[in-house]
Amino acid sequence: MPHAARVLTGARHGWLLPYAAVLRGMVLLLADILGRVVVRPGELRVGIVIAVLGAPVVLVLLRRLRTVAQ
Image (cartoon, rainbow, N blue to C red):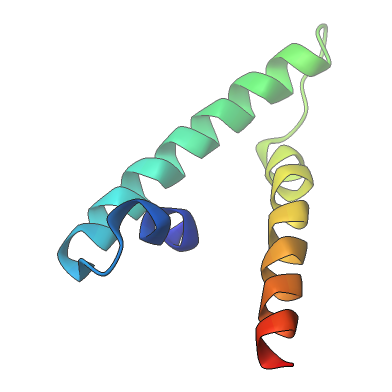
């Protein structure tokens, strides 16, 4: 979430931590709701949903880092 918060705040470090904390809570809540809705009679654990949502983000960040380094 710090990377998403940095996109919203820019270079203002004073707002980075509060934005990251709020975004983290929102994403966790959305992952919980999604985990309860996707497997309707049961539920998916939040960690599994976060991993499925977060893996593409990490791959994009790594790809961007690799292209900047070249």
